[in-house]
Amino acid sequence: MPFLASRLDRIKPSPTLAVTQKARELKAAGRDVIGLGAGEPDFDTPDNIKAAAVEAIRRGETKYTDVDGTPALKQAVVAKFRRENGLSYTPDQVTVGSGGKQVIYNAMMATLDPGDEVIIPAPYWVSYPDMVLLADGRPVSVACRENSRFKLRPEALEAAITAKTKWLILNSPSNPTGAAYDRAEMKALTDVLMLHPQVRVLSDDMYEHLVYDGFRFVTPVEVEPGLYDRTLTMNGVSKAYCMTGWRIGYAAGPKDLIKAIAKVQSQSTSNPSSISQAAAVEALNGPQDFIAAHNAVFKERRDLVVEMLNAAPGLACHRPEGAFYVYPSCAGAIGRKTPQGKTIASDDDFVTYLLDAEGVAAVQGSAFGLSPFFRVSYATATELLREACARIQRACAALA
Ligand SMILES: Cc1ncc(COP(=O)(O)O)c(C=O)c1O
Image (cartoon, rainbow, N blue to C red):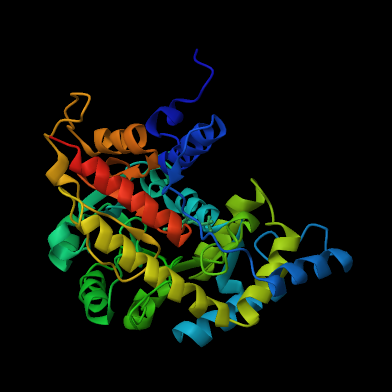
């Protein structure tokens, strides 16, 4: 009898964490490596948020809290949804977990039976399919091509829905493409969903605040209130508030689902860190002006990266609406030969070549379910990004 569970054979370790780890190891071994794999802002957590955590420790808020969040944080989440999204929830419709990742995982564990299908537009955040698989569900990947700017088309959504579809996971702005749905695009999708009452929507709004050029973010329930009773609207403090290490994510939705999520959490981690919860209250209720300041920097970096990658022979890069990623095509490099005589046959080969030849660590598109592309995170100092893009240009130019 094997010791390790067979369910582990269905999944793989997170490829994005693997790239970050590999870049770290190469750097520690003395190689000059620029990591473009990170999924976190390079800005520090704002001081007022840190101070709120210190205060919480001083006040003795160091004990277990309610399993799915303190009343103060749930209230702050209720206020956030009302203020920023025009959505009305009560605290018992809110759940808080140790990161958005845990909230999504719990939602899948709480709702999926063997054979239940979850529609996941590709390219997707690497964890969605594996979370579905761990919960015994069946991920149904729907390719969203470059010519639709990597966005799910209503016809493709309609075609993917079956009697077994339990969820659609929507992520806007997207990791890994940065693509975000405007109101009309979102309405076209919610119109399809209104025809299929068995389908629930998990809206992953983690990058809500990271949008550029005056783009107006929308979430499905805001566009179609008819979806209120079957949507879990998920968000967190990791990205906008530069709090990836604090591990706080949250969601709002129907009470029965929120209770089921709490049941899963009660038998795994219990409450998220009491101190991080106090910090998240300050993040949501406190000053928000640093977000615009960060976005000005991100926008400048996005434009720099898009321009420099488009100047690299064999690459083509869209300018996305949000997040801190771009997803360039490396189709023009496929079939070419490296100076060492190796043929680039896939995006996996291409990113391996970038790392070996120029010490640039990016993530292959195959990890996100759509090839031949690669993901570049521009949450890195501007000068390093400029140098990384110059190296990518040099690597591309050296292909024969
Ligand atoms: C699309 C998306 N959703 C959710 C998460 C989870 O974020 P966290 O668990 O840090 O809240 C991430 C993190 O990379 C993400 O990119």
